[in-house]
Image 1 (cartoon, rainbow, N blue to C red):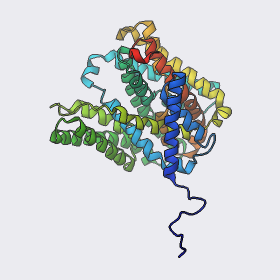
Image 2: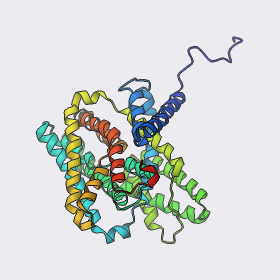
Image 3: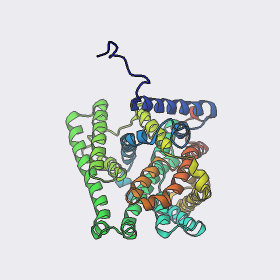
Image 4: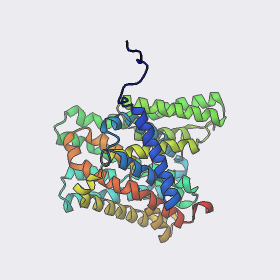
Length: 404
């Protein structure tokens, strides 16, 4: 044995944790820079840092490491979706059916607009165009939640935006699930896949959410109403539920959103304190946007830029039409309806997860629709947070000290 056996080899072996740290620090620095000097949302800086360091630009972060980081995306997305799910009060929604209808209409308008543009303007086959339209219905929960938190925004536009985000995220997943029999049929899947796969995804997701919600309420009743103790319980249960969802091959998206909603609506004895992840929760957003940003490829814009730009434009027009059609029923003026539609512009990590989960079934599907959707995400991951920030500020709902 050499006398210097205790020294590291040269060159020093690559350590994934070093690059994870570099990625996160770059994201934090990018977020602070764009916020301090450009007055833009930090999320834009997080995503830009990930794009710059990822395989599609400087390639400092490789695809192998990004694959290993998928678990962090699932956990970060799980935390964010659980927090959004807590905001869904089914009793309140029953008293405001027009808002639910608005969520359905704006989602379907966006989906149909993107479908027709991809199908007839860019000659995509019907199935890939349908998958693209379904994903287009969604809005990034993380962007709307984080930007509203940064601005400390409160008001009818902010609250309606958050509810609509929850509705159209669920609808996007449900429509994608309904398309699965067509996907399996198109690519010669078995009869069991065609008939049972969609039912399994929906039923198992809701069952996981119900069990997780029931267990959480039992535990918080035992530990009491201490905020710190309940915070720890929620973190543990979200991580556990994400793990169970991944193990059972059910979508983290629906399972965690439904988990949050069930905790809120099954708590008859009011044991549960609504959890605000606060400053600690910012780390989840950094992880989500830096890593998903690194997964995107700027070269996609050169390959399918025209289709991606059309996707972004008609998607927003569809959402705007849906919101404006129902605006009188929910008491919104034309100006406020327009600002609400602008606030719904972002599409980010949720869409990336949907693309990977759907296209992972059959590589042929990935080759056809993934490039245009991911290219659209490149655009909206950078510009979407700016649109939401603009809408909430123009609505006068940002805290005064954040408006400058």
